[in-house]
Length: 179
Image (cartoon, rainbow, N blue to C red; front, side, top):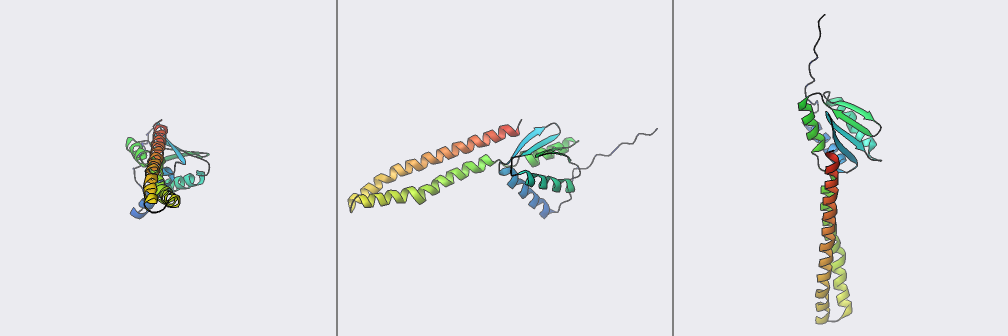
């Protein structure tokens, strides 16, 4: 009796360069949104969509199934497990799904920018107007300058809180991804 050996499926994708770029952008948007939890599992990764992100995850996974025959994909509800039989495939899965940016990085930066924008658009003009309304001439300017320091301190405090929240979110996401 002759035993037939199966050849391993090569780690290859049938997408064009443009298709690969667009697919990567779609994965970065979805995984960067924070709506998909990522976890390493033996042989690959497990992706679990939060409510509202299930359809997007399943759509991308089905697209991957059509172009990357080397991936073993198992879908259970809103959870997708993608594995590979080869060490090279597992390394590619880690690179594709575990190394993409986490939402925490983006939220931390957005929080700082939002605080600065709020200060520029809200706090400083109100301080100047309050100073002008409170006095006349040089007295108003002195009062406005005096109001700028507390407004600037408030902006810095809000920016630091937003940055800390972003760092905490990123660390929480990274801890979940490394489980």
